[in-house]
Image (tube, rainbow, N blue to C red):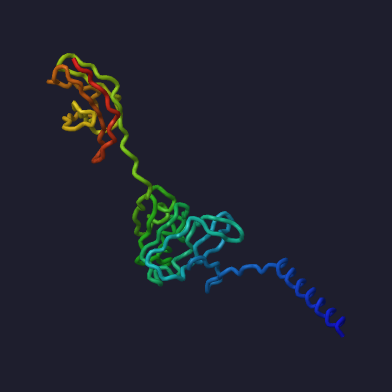
Length: 249
């Protein structure tokens, strides 16, 4: 009796182990979400593969956001593809969307040439009450400008610093000193000089954008001075240059 019990216990353990092995070896494929129109649904956006197979088409919208940002890429059928086309306004304006941000790759809003625009075909597509946001000079701008209100996106990149310059040399003759610097593209140059290296109580002089030198007058005899220069473009200044010494005479 004990032998039979051990046998059945061993058999049960073998069956359990085999079941676990099979369960690991045969993974369950994740189901793809589909919208009510039968298209692949990604974050409320219905998409389909473009006929060329190198991009996706935006078919419909099932969310309720006021501002919709279209992703730069979608994953579909194992591929990562950019959106290139809107089939129509199927749900965007109906669901209260007011703004749509387009990636640069979108080149069609559901019509393909100027004849469609002239024939009034675009009026059947919709987008009523929606403003599009695009980058200037992009394909998306060309696509929406034919028949849709749009605004330009502001790049979030850091503003480029104003290019500075440097003092090439200083020449001292008694109470006079001539400062020369490297010419760069700017609106003006600003020079400051002081008897203190930290520029405390410095005097400032502005020079036009075409200048490359300045004569400083009324310097005190036998006193060393320090000088710096910076540029201005628009309302922005560059950083001050390295401190240069005006020798004493």
